[in-house]
Picture 1 (cartoon, rainbow, N blue to C red):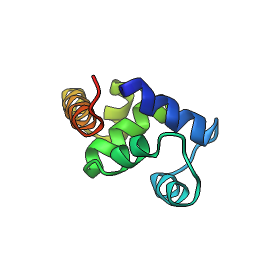
Picture 2: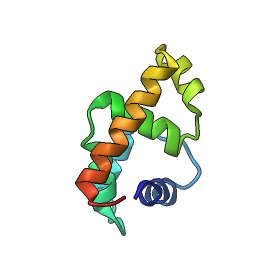
Picture 3: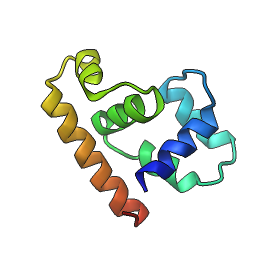
Picture 4: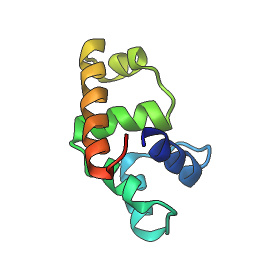
Length: 94
């Protein structure tokens, strides 16, 4: 589920901020309890992966993400929705 990968990311990276590149390299070297979740997130297209990362790991709201990425907030909502749909399909969850 969506909350599963949110928890995995938060538990794995604790409370410090890291880049997506470091997330990917850490994933390759550190064992995870649910590696399929992080793998699914990292396999998303760049724009989807970025909004998921900023929202669930960094804790930004959609309006803040829109400002960071210089996109319309409706674009961010769309990317979030589409990313969640892909993850649901890949992870077989709700």
